[in-house]
Length: 122
Image (tube, rainbow, N blue to C red; front, side, top):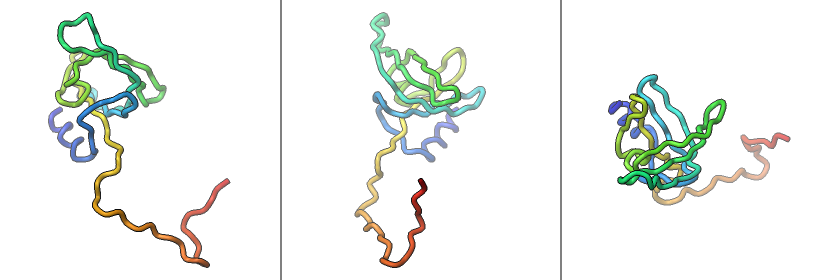
């Protein structure tokens, strides 16, 4: 599982935090799967002494499923691999913001009289 998580960090830009509206990647070891979900809410689990949260999310699968997992902050922010029902899992939010790539490139425009590669489909 550690190797999978390392590879995941090479492929995706991931966030250090997880907020409502974030899309997270969920990796399970057995069976080895990768699933996406959107975070729909957090609610503190006041019944536990330590900091636990009910993390509500919508799995972006077919069919879509609403689930709620009770996790610690380190678990839903990708700081640690955790187990549920004896299966190892990893969860971390994907960073979809624009990377800082230095100075902005000038947009290319189509010269008058030349046809664009894009076309409008109605």
